[in-house]
Amino acid sequence: MLALSPELCGKIIQFTSHRRRDLLSLCLTCKAFQREAEARIYAQLIFADPRRALQACTTVVHNERLALHVRTFCFNQEGTRHPVDLGREFWLVVQRALINMSNLEILILCDNTYMNGWVLDNPAIQFSLQDCKLRFRWEAPVIRFLKRQDGLRSLYLYDPFEDLSETLPQGALPTLQTFDGTFLVGMQMVRSPITHMQVLIDVEPASVLASLPRLAQMKKTLRGLNLVDVMEEISLPALELITRALPDLRHLGLFSYPMTNRHEFHKYLLPMHSLRSIELDVSRWNPPPSVPAGQRALACELQTFCSTIDKVLFWTGTSRFRWIYTTHWMHRVETTQHSAWGMV
Image (tube, rainbow, N blue to C red; front, top):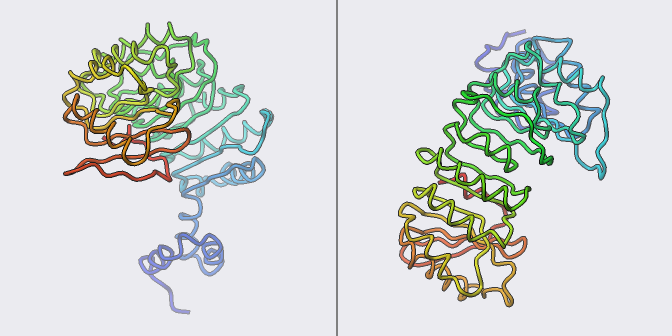
């Protein structure tokens, strides 16, 4: 039988890489195909089913060669109304798999019980992540794990608990550029060179207003900022604090836009000479601003007070309308929720 060169095998695998069943068949064809196909199959391990995740983790625990192929590992349990404790044995297998995945670059790991942060706290875990998304409690084991990730560029971390007794040590996450997560955790990232940040406001209004001035520490790097679920009663005070702390922002959101008496809102936009994009909630307007005439008028109004704005996003409930200015204002309804805050 004529032997196929690794280059030819690689090209064939490349054309079939989106068809997992074909890759599995090629694994059985010959050794050359097996090597190339296995690399593709194990490059991304993405699971929502705990049983399948456990099977895959068991495989890479017992086969270090396959573990070295893994670049992305994702376990995000879905479809359960109530948190299900998968048990310590499940998470031990996951931990052993993470130890073997020394080439891992992207990690998405969710623990709906918020009880198993220890799974990340093992010095034998040697990979250097670029992108990390975690649903774990902000506690010492998780912080020690993140402290070792010197090359991390993007972090999503959701912790629903307001009591954050642990703090990130100074000098941790020296290359972090993007953060998406809860407010109190986000406030611990202000010493990193963050360029894009989105935080969920899940704490008391007084705590929010007291913490916002700390964002000034990111003045030199931060380009896009979104605050999600800002309480209406602190919307204007929060806007004032942010525009004072971060006058060079290019994107700002997500604030409730007043239906009347908008002069104070406009006043805070006047010093924002670099602002290109703004994201506003008009869900409480009654009636809502008409499309397109009403929203176009609002976009023109905003541009009057901040001439650099050329993108305006209006939220009405779950619908988002994107307005873009070139020589005139044009709009479209967003069917997929692109992160405007991360695109400036």
